[in-house]
Image (cartoon, rainbow, N blue to C red; front, side, top):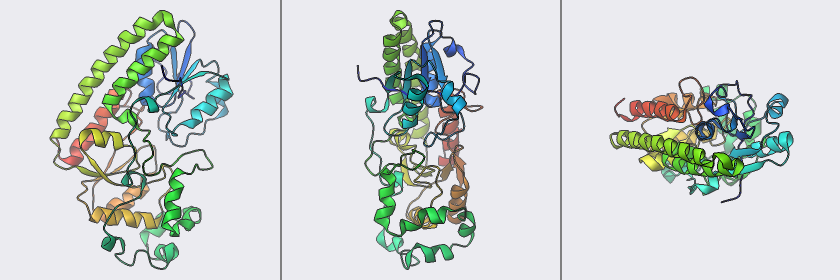
Length: 362
């Protein structure tokens, strides 16, 4: 089996997701999982045989988690950590090492045939050169553009202009996509492996098998129970995939603008085209220049709608929606909150939103 690697939970069991059948742990083995979608599958496969805890508090972004000392301490005694990998949740490795020393790790991303991110998904927009220069877009540097932005200036005056003012050179701007920030978050470049595999129910069936085998190594006496529960989970995920596929076959529109590059797996699986993203650096406000580029891309496509995410500030998406006249909806890539307390509930919630946005049945 591939080398074990992990995404652990900084939350005490009471924080949103811990009070469930998967947290029994009669034998005392403890598994920490980085994000809710993996946590939900893990706790269902673990049953009462392992204690499974969630690290990322519901409502927080997976790209820039900074735990409190109390949350780190809650991971003491961890035997196995489970994480996405692909440079998304490296924070879990550091946290678990600090709390528990040399716990085993299960790194899922490399094991499920990761896809490559496109330029549009990380903010390298591909639109016609004539439209790119519309309104003398690249003349006189970004500073002059900021002076002409009107309402956008008010929206972007919280210090981000200083943070991004070197973006006048387009090459420098895109190089930042693969540079870690001071908070440890990682921004992907064109062609990087996409870490958001959990938004594909088909790949999540593979995840169930990998979790069952990792749990069997951790607690061999319960191996058959883990494998049996994994088969039940896979059956539910296969049904979910068919439900989404049936809806996708009826969508009248196929182009969308997502908040950041989180829905590439979903789009690839169900035939959607991501024309642009609102925020190429998750958690960092886009520059006025980049927002102009998104508007230019929108004019060159038939994008049906824009989507914000509940874990991130929706204001940049609201500005672009207002300027473009496109409707704005919300997609949740992580879940764990009210009404999205299971992986299937999260995906069905997003499906309902997409049905409204793309012309499908509710």
